[in-house]
Image (cartoon, rainbow over all chains, first blue to last red):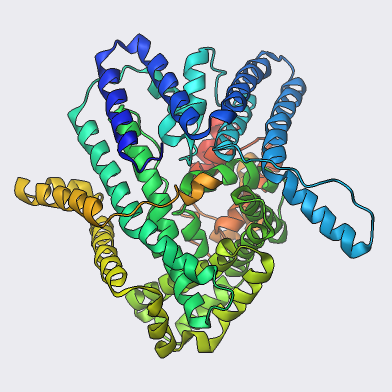
Length: 483
Length: 82
């Protein structure tokens, strides 16, 4: 049962209806059953792993809290995290490490006999493992009390709206919301429905319409440079539409139940620098990496070069978290390099901007920074999207070739679209841009809409629904669902 | 050395600031030396000098000369009656 299905909407409607019908003391049972049913429909074979990880994290949290000596607390926490990471490592990275070692052995002419294992990646393991790790670390630092109610804790671990692809939530934000009686609130219900509809809109009209077009280039053994340029830019649009739609639906579903999830995106393609980009893209992962990887790595570091190293390691972890492949490792390293290089050249670039009087036109300067940041992000996504390192380097070379950027070549590359697909894409892309423009001018487009006449509001809602029903296409789940 | 001097010295030593640049108006992002990277090196120095531990929430809260002092006061560093 994908988010993008009638079945899911029916499932959600039943859960929401029942949720407000039954007394608060029984709601945790409903949410837990709903979460496990949702997970089981998607991936029943990994239910035991989810249950085992939940139980293990629950008891480890209590044991950490019960320790009187700090060293002991630390020891238990480290053992707990190691076990969780072992499972993540086994399912997600075993074959990656195994195949890498085999390649090294072959190169060095060594005998290497560990066979390839048929391992299926358990759904959502990267997301719930990170939530579990943050829970244990927060208990160790005294920022979070170990949850004693097994039911509430289990929902934190498996809450169906955010289980598959986040947002990655902290226990101290989510657990209290489950415990408080959420009264039926009309605003929450309608806001949730609007967010879900907007998620469907972005997913079915942008992301899944672009997916086969992007694939036609990246799966082509001999794409032209201009096709790679265009497909990479389109992939960036697809990825944002896909992942932000998934977050919209998750946030919308949770809001219908009175639960507030963390916003995961703030128009990342309008970032003015790479650091700005990471404060707008997959925000809950970025803050997780900052709090549990970067800040601990910076402890005791008093030189900029040492902080630079911490940045590169953090981005490396980010890359590896995304996928068990060298392309993701390289993608992470590229972002680490961007961040360090950006910081190192900051003053020089400032002087240059001043020298050419760019600082006298702040609007132009800002849009130049947005364009450069977007292109840098696009370049890194060549590695993110390519299916092997060899292809990634070939595609990257094409992306960087000046000829690939010839306007005539780019116009010709649009042949990867059929005329109908192109018109539909451009139309709905403009709608999304208008929505984002209003968001940049106001706090929330939904709030802005609520101040319009009832006719205008309902015209927009009906437009969203009708567009999805007529022009929407549904692909193979969410890109980040595979991580 | 008094705590306030230790505090000021942390800025001077780590961020390479002149003595007269360390004032109550000093804030993260206002001077080119105190940027996000410089902030992390400053945090390390403050942690060493005052023997405190700042987690990511406190690191985010510490965004000016004055907010840093307030935060350290909460962690038991006395800037007045020493």
